[in-house]
Amino acid sequence: MRKHNDTRRSLCAYLGIDFVENLAVQVPVFDLPLALETSVIEHYVQKNNTFVSRQQVQKLEAERTLFAAKLANRINSTISFNYGVNQYASNFADAYRRLNDRQSFVVGLTIPVFQWGIGRNNVKIAENNYKSSLLSIEQKKRSFHNEIREKVNNYNYSVKLWFTAEKAYRLSQEQYRMLVQKFALGRVSMYELNVAVQEQSTALQHYYSAVSDTYSNYFALRTLALYDFKQKQELVDILTNITPKK
Image 1: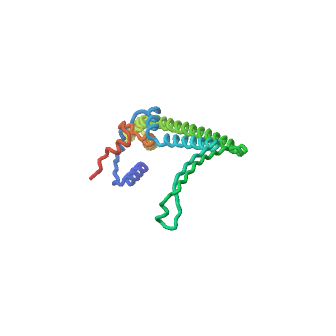
Image 2: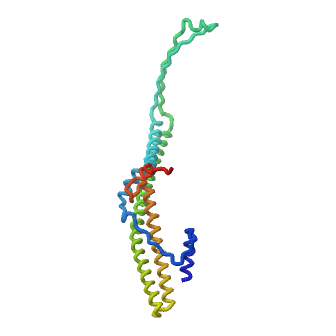
């Protein structure tokens, strides 16, 4: 019992409240979804998570690099046309009399003839880099998909543990109360009563651990998808509807 009271004192100190001898442990009410589907999570991840857009940008960058390498190995031509007038004179006014027309038309053509295969090698390297980028993007997508599936499985499993641990804790409370009555009648020893206290404390720790894991897994998915599956509303809508306090 002394160890049990020490635990209560530590809890009261952590919560910043006065120590209460008969501190009752209040069982939290489960108010989260009973289960979540991977397909639903992925839908909102595709819609709201920046991971998808980052992979698209990376793919476009790889395509741009490949296109630039191929373009540099092709025949390039330039065409320019210039027209103007000029005149020389000893003073500023005469410079604008009887102007001479100057026109030019220039066509430039660049043919990669003497590159000795350098351009072709550059294109080959760019193609290999492009394929490597696509493989990297695909691998990241698979890893991200597996991460989502793992988080969903963890949440669904922690929900089941929540209810199992809650039943175990309630059962340990009932067994402890029964042993206290038997101990008062002299039917059980102090050792058996201490064992019941230890079992109740262990059941309580397992229960709180299950509750903590459930909320941690839920908010991890909530952050990943930017969607509140409890309110069935996107986080951006929830934040924009918050009325500031005056």
